[in-house]
Amino acid sequence: MSVKLEYANNENLSFLQRHPTLREFLTSPALFITIGSFIAAVIICYTQYGYIPDGTREWPIAQIKVPLWHLLWMGLWTGYCMAIVGQAGGIFCLPYFMTILQFNTVNVSPTSTINTAVGPWGAFFGYLKGKQFNLDMAVFPILGACVGALIGPFIRVYYLSDPTAFKAIIGVLLVYMGCNLWYQITPMYLKGQQSLVTKFNEIARQRKERGEAPDGLPSDFRVETVKRDWNVVHVKYWGEELKLSSKLLVAIGFVIGVISSTLGVGGGFLLVPLMAMLGVPMYVLVTCTIPFVLALSIVSLFSYTVILPQLTGSLVGPEWGLGLFVVSGSCLGAWLASKAQRFTPDKVLKPMLGSIIGIFGLLYVLNYFFTLPFKV
Image (cartoon, rainbow, N blue to C red; front, top):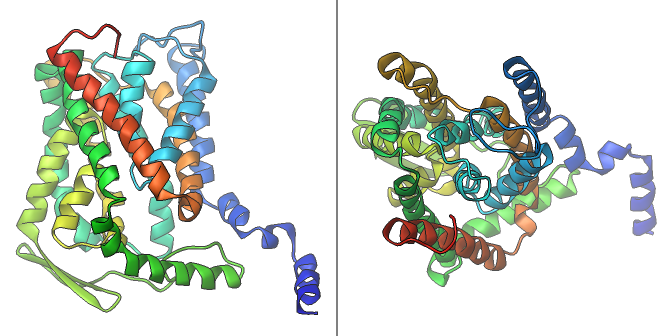
């Protein structure tokens, strides 16, 4: 009887009410960023070149020929695969640009940065709407990152313009990321996450019963500031409290800013483990990593496109249209991953991606010391 009643109630609901995840997507900033990035890319291409570069016509700055569908597909699957294991797609896009598409000029770094400067805005507005950000916690690493992001592009142009040396540096980071993904399926790591996963799953179950899209955080979750000055940042959340050194946060942000802007990545993959070492839980860390990545990426792009040309005369700006086409796919992929993440077997996906990323990285490093029989 109860089954029939539930079926009748479902029949009275509208299509979107019966599919809360679809309803959320249609009102999500991710949809507008996906469409907006695509339209912006088309406009920029026609403004700059009078046509959309494709498999038969070259991208003038990138000096490559690639079909439009390839860029959209690349963004979709890299954004999805990396977001589903809690990483940004930018660090995977960069080696794909260089190895698969053979985009090896210095311009690849600012072009890759477009992904991290635009893609996270969907998540940013989502957290902002839920009032789950704590900018007091984010401001100090952002200050350091903004200074570091002004320096990185100069290092890229003057010391890492050789593609082989640049790929070797990327290779070291990819090997690190691959090892980190493998570590995340070890009993040591999983034991520390078990209580948190149980709590998140219970909240997600309750939300689903209410006809809402499943989410692991309660709607009233907040990271509240107790104290913030140049000595300490003191916050509280979910009955816990945390104190961090303001000066240490600035230093961490600065180092990550230099490295990330040099390479053309967002820096979240470096910030997360460092902050975790300071005792910051992942569900708290996300409230400051997104504004951190956005600020770092925007300042990095500004340095590549404005400051560097003004001071050195080097024109190393991004291939805007190409980057935005990738973003339109990446943003959609990341959103899909955020909904599928709970149902994805980490024990399969993380080691698989960790192996692929690690092998790519190892090949980049080996290619610096030895001439490989194939192109990487």
